Amino acid sequence: MSDEPKYLRLTVELTVEVLDVDALQAAALAEIRHPDADLTEEERTEQAELVGSDETGASALQWLIEPDHVLQLVEHITEIEPREAVLGVEPSDGPSEEEDEEEAHDHV
Image 1: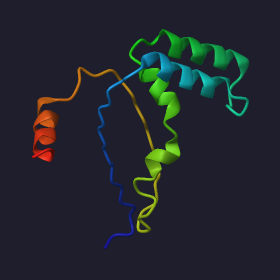
Image 2 (image 1 turned 120 degrees about the vertical axis):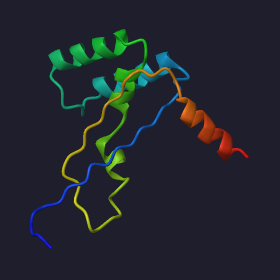
Image 3 (image 1 turned 30 degrees about the vertical axis):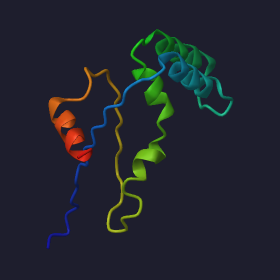
Image 4 (image 1 turned 45 degrees about the horizontal axis):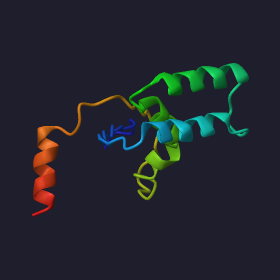
């Protein structure tokens, strides 16, 4: 075996339905305004405007997902060491037809 590092990229796709955009935005704004948030006042204002103006809720959801939550997917695996985590949240047209078929099979 080679001593060169080996890397694997884990890709997870999750589609969520936003049930209450206003509540989602309010929760994100509370995080942004929290005294422990590592933001300058200018950054707080900028992020609050971004969350408030995004009618999809994507910006709010991104604020509410903790990086540690994502890393919990692999933290129990001692044979690997997480090196990089990138999280993106973007609007979607809803579940794909493939997801609808899988869901139908799950309820059989």
